[in-house]
Length: 162
Image (cartoon, rainbow, N blue to C red; front, side, top):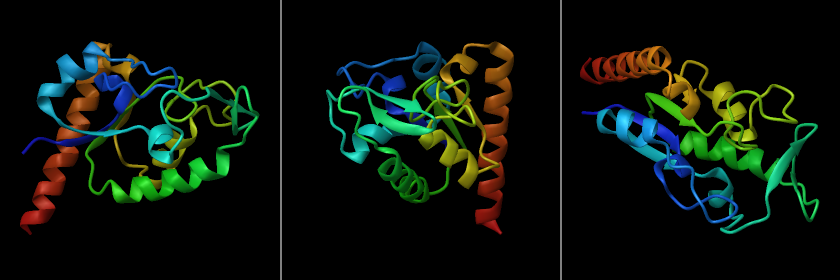
């Protein structure tokens, strides 16, 4: 059985971005993809924001529509907690860099550097191996992530057989 790994759906080539596009990553699809079972998630689409949609940005930690000024923060935080719980067992997660929802590090306007969904994921599943697509492009970081994912999957399989 392959490890179950959550992934930002745009990285698989799904057209879920605000402009109807995607951010297909060769490292995600071609390099890591054959080794894992992907569990795709797009928090903004699943929240009901649609495609295409108004772009959002984090401003002082709040997810704000760049045209309307609409504040999506509370809805995204509620969604993130519920969706993360509904994902069930995962062995790792690959997030979209710099996204106001899924960015892992260096997201402009994020107090802790992470997008809202990524921040909730790290808080609710602190032991889950996480990386972004940029990290997967680095051979050493990709190998370390996959080793942690395999170890998580092996531990979960061992727990099921007890």
